[in-house]
Image (cartoon, rainbow over all chains, first blue to last red; front, side, top):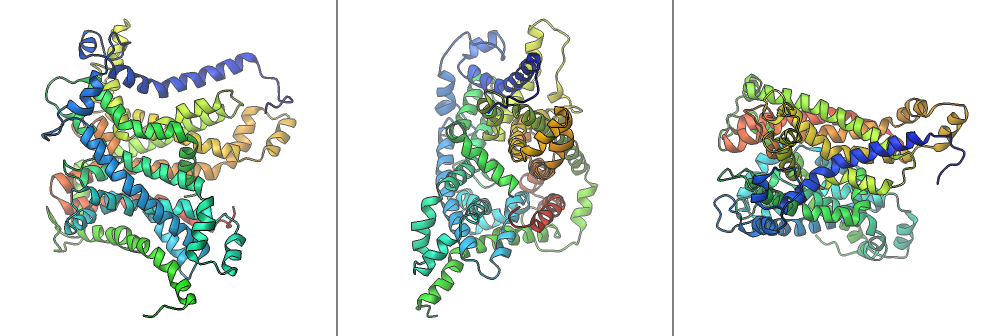
Length: 291
Length: 295
């Protein structure tokens, strides 16, 4: 609502304000626009002109190349496609398991407190902040012992182990603010642990469920460190594939293919952001302000 | 054990449900931190070996010029990254708080880089900053032939390109935190100050910004955490180069542990990284936990 009693503001002031905001918006948008424009140009076009230019040609050839043809490293399957599929195979179970664990933990830590449960919650939060470098060496040992080194299940296990602190934090902070009478009354009526969870708590958990799924999806899809340390060529995620593709030094640099590849790698999280931006922001701020 | 009575089950069930996560915390978080610390006290090379050598690896680490320069790079990068992100984030939040028409759309634009992987950000900025194809070339073609912007290939300046790309990725996030903080302020105080004739500038500098101290604190923690962990962005943007000009502790740790087979010194560097984060975090958590419950 515009406050009419507000002090008189010169029109030029507003114009400058909007001007600054637009220029800043351009700064954030230009790299993305450049990515898109470059990805639809032909190499011929780029060679004749320069990288930062309006397309003289239009083709989706670079996209096809990046998706299924470009040779990345020495592997027999070409293109980003196998990496993209690996990422999907990692993300789906890792997000599902860590979210379910987080919901159950949050439920217990809010409504079924026992001696030491608050202490445990505080102790678990270290997992949100530990620099992963401090756990990489033992984790690679453990995955080796479990015969999971370089495999997709190994990466799923890793992402669950280091994601559960965040998911628990999200659900616990959400549940702790719910009216406790709700659960107390159900307990008096003789409802059990699972009945209360499935009948009362889960149906009102949709907002935090969305926030958590988006947060975990973005984190795991964008992960590079675990992907590069704990995978072998058959299980590498798309971030590692993209990095290898861009940095393979053989032949001429094909900017259009690199840019198409970068968009392919970024597309899932961008779509999530565009579709559910509100929840995305809520997750970011919940992870920080309440952390 | 017979846990047949209803009461018994109710007693054990919550603990049972929590137990996988307790195991995760004990093994993957605390156990592994201890394990890494133990390795840092041994002479492990390619494989962990448990011949203890005291703090020798730490001595070697702090005699290693690459480690020292990676620490210095982190100081330079971290200070600028945190500082610029805070300033840009705060200014954008204040500007957006002036009853802007397209606030939602602008917010979406400012924040989308946060949804991208640092690898994608690094890839794009690598070409933009590359003097032979990117911005420098573009300006040359516009007719300004002497324009020079070759920081990414200049060892003295390359670390600042990491700041540019990092700020592009993370400043919108800081804006979102600050905007949430601004919206949480009691507007009656502001109105009263304005009635007393306070200018917009002094309302912000004397009332609003001081009352957002906790928000500054959490933004600082998040950014410091991002800076200390930063790995992907630098790998994709400069690969740590030119030479070792943009080396940071996370890259040092990765290379010494997984490429050079020097686990002992790699573990020691990881422990130093952890200590740095804890040194920043513990005062923060302490002040958070002391707050009244529904603050």
